[in-house]
Image 1 (cartoon, helix red, strand yellow):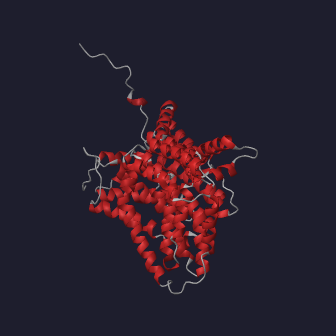
Image 2 (tube, rainbow, N blue to C red):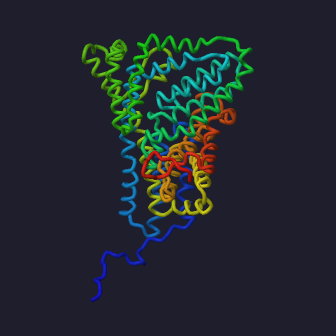
Image 3 (tube, helix red, strand yellow):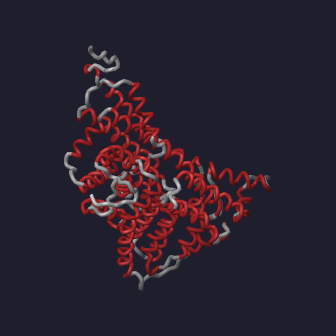
Length: 500
């Protein structure tokens, strides 16, 4: 007796056909044109809406090609939903991070870190100090842009007063800002990379230390060597830094006790508490600390006519969802410390959802696979695979002019291959950050490069060769790949490091 025919089997004639290389290139080319246009017209604001529209339009073009090749709208829609769903964990973390930033700004935790960071300035090692302080600030607030636009601007002003090189200073500021941003659990890109690669946030940060700490150490040595000749010729004063310190001291109750929420969060990370509950706990502790140590500040932020318990509740509650607005009279301090809240993360969430949707459609239609096959045909060893990933991330930064795209697209392209070869997801997430995140400010037409020009009044052509951290880190990642040093494989013990 013969087996009954399976009525659910799709006839071969109805199977969608594989896209041609031209099919795969059309939506990519359209995206490049639209993103370039967005950067041309909107500059560093292109990530706040224009890039999202470009992604959606390019996705629409890919969908039309997919339907032409025999794919149904139902299957494409399902892939979009699946692509968005992988970001839900990261979205929850981003919302919690927004609240954490808001309450830590209100509690004085972030201002205290900025205060003590600025205290270590010494003209005899100015460049290294600029790098180190920007690293501390960026790590505490999770934003390289905010760091460069506030503390970085102050360092550029001091460099002019000391008659030191503003190009080297800009390189030091950007190196430190991206070092701190890269290791901060508050950073959007630090959350995005593990979300795309499928690794855990704090495990991702710990694994990045192997490439990040040597890179920043080499950079600091180079900044010390460059600054050595200036140690005996520096003139001027640090009035701008003193003004920042005085404003912080007058506005906040600066105390080492304000750093306790930071130590608690670090302890939770050390104990491997998952990122979302750990960050949420940190935000709640920040709110409690604000009520204990910053009562005068809270009352000054309350709406006119509001006082007592209502003032405390409304200001702290607002810090969770809409951040804080500081009015000190010092523009730099106000820009540095007026931010946070869940609402501040909504644009990033929008961009992530659009980017992941675009990537999911390309993947579903077989277009990503077309590129991956071409790249992987030459990436036979571990070193060449990592080198190919690094090159793809840098190329995406060059072509799409957006650091988020430089994480999401290569992440989706290489994720399956890294898994097939038995590598731990943290290897991919680390490589994405070692190349996608930190090379973005080196490209003039990238949104990050455009922002740095607006903030520091120097183009990437001026400072590119002094961004030592940003240049060394991708090279070190490739060296690790070829030597097999600290290449993490999937194993029984998640902490086992083996050479590939």
